[in-house]
Amino acid sequence: MGVRSAFSAEAKALWSDGRGPSLVVLATAWGLLVGARMIYPVLIPHLQRTFDISLTVAGLLVSVLWLCAAIGQLPGGILADRYDERSLLATSVLLVAVGLLFVITAPTLVLLFAATALWGLSHSLYPIARITLLSQIYAERLGSALGVTMATGDVGQTVLPPIAAILAAAFAWQVGLGFLVPALVLLALALLIILPALNVEEGGGHGPTSAGLRVVLAEIRGPNVALMSGILLLFIFLWQSFTAFYPTYLVSMKGLSPAVASGLFGFFFAVGVVVKPVAGAAYDRIGMRLSLIGVLLPAVVGLLLLPLFDNLAFLVAITALISTMLGTGAITQSYLAQIFSEDMRGTGLGIIRTGTATFGAGGPVVFGFVADTGYFDEGYIALAVLLAVVILLTFRMSDE
Image (cartoon, rainbow, N blue to C red; front, side):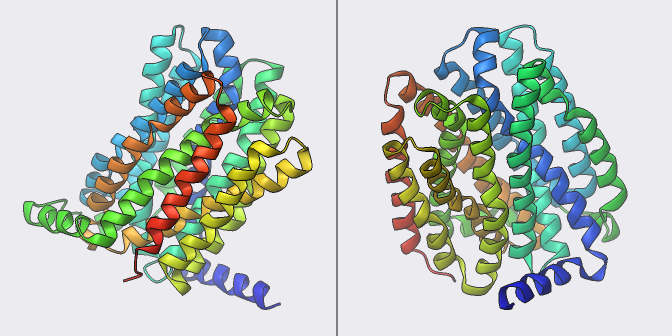
């Protein structure tokens, strides 16, 4: 009852003061956007056949999506500081719908890469504006609110890849991605109608100044923020490497059918639906360092065990262990959001997220090359070692 009461109290607090509908529509849009990106790994076998590409090239395609989703976050953060987040969020969702239309109609590999880049750039406008808006609406419960929105991302990543796999097998891979377009258009309208336009109501954002930028850069150079940026970079690298090829790995190395592999891939994110709100609430209560170590340690164990077992029951348990690392984002992003002043929060987050995600986006192409050379199992062991390094860095941080 204690746990149930705590969850009930947390839910009531998040819904209070008329804030619930904003959180619902913001989180729902995030779930579709993030879930859409995770459809690509499920479609890799189809893309290989359609465009006659290797795993390395497929990894490069995923890397382009992540890279473009990263490099746009700095301008996205600056825009979030200067303009109304509501309009920025709706524009992002609408442009992603346009990008998906170009992806599914691309006649050549070059145009597929270009359309994927547009998709990623459009997506990049959403993450920072989402955080800056939540930090204003939920100043006292940012960790919990952010954890909920990130959990809906995992709902999308749980539900959408298996749906896409079924549609791709039954019809065509284009249908497995294109079915999201109408939903995204409707959500763009919902964002405009439901979300508050806080910057407009407060006279408009001011955006970054030279003095403000100097303050932000000084904060970024601080030991804790520099360490957190390094942790975030390594985590993004290994997370994108893991997710880009996990369904392919389960089929080619573990002998699972594509349907079962996509289901297990969805289960990976389903666990995150529970982990992320818990991680966010833990950050609010016990601080960054202990909560971060708590979600990373089980994932190291899972990655080390993964190459050793082929039995489906063991693979389910191992996948659950690995998925605890999904709680990392609710902790690191809450911590970073609360470091910067309100008028420079988007810019500060944009600098860090663009820098770390840009370098982290290289993970899929590197991991694809490792898999192509016959070291698929060893690649996951290397990811376990990398995650252990992240934990060691976390021990060096304080919660101040």
